[in-house]
Image (tube, rainbow over all chains, first blue to last red):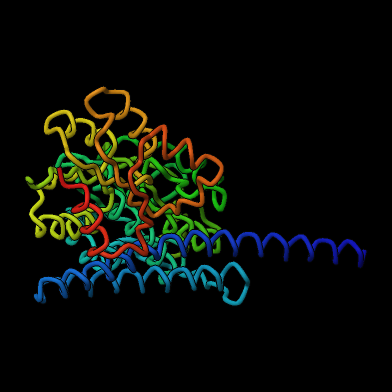
Length: 248
Length: 127
């Protein structure tokens, strides 16, 4: 019995170490991008003797800090240093706040950001802070990835949206581009730590935001899913409605 | 000596605009493609003198682009500067094939290549 427990613990420790390492590789690769942007923008400002790059440097640095913050949250959750309390959460307000948090980054990348929180949905069971962090991570990855698909301007749109599905209520980030399929997400997640660019249909970078979101969402016993919203495709979190509050 | 027509293949919109401005300040005509497919279209329309290429693109990789690009006779001698987030040591076993078969002029590791260095590399290739 004791041996079995020890074996199970060893298995858990080894697997957590691998998961930590994979996440760290992916985030380190991802962080090169904003740091390069800052370094080159600063050099450009120096060469030109202008200050016009400073605003962009601030937005880039802010988004890198956000990625780091969310990464630390996911590491704490993965290692059991932090437990998430599930509570009744209003999806619309989380989507709105997440949209506000990435607006600067979207403007910088020329991506039009929409927040579709129409429709009345009751509260869901989740952790507000973690859900917002997951949505911000997902959206940041897609914002940086969208222009790399060389889409015509009207398709450079991203939508935070929520809708009902047979499993509950989905909150996600959606785009017009049709390249995203459920297999793309499964394949990308299975390539975690093994490929430089696991989500090559979505982004030219390491897609760390998706892994960070996946880790955070799993800590709430939820799952990321590829879903559709008004013909748009995206990645969302499926949550159960909070039945207790629905009755009130 | 005329200024070069540079085809810059850079998937990140932010970095692309910074590199574009830096090369334009040096007097080059720069066209930006974010993906391999649009890079081929632009090359076809504008016949670049120099190509600056990131290998890690969305969908098709820069290597796929290069193989396709080099199949056309007109483009076999166009100098290509690889300017990538992927370090060259990744291609250690195939470095010779990579350099010779695909005729790569210079390989720059993007995180450590300054704007000045990129400009100097492209400037040295002026036609």
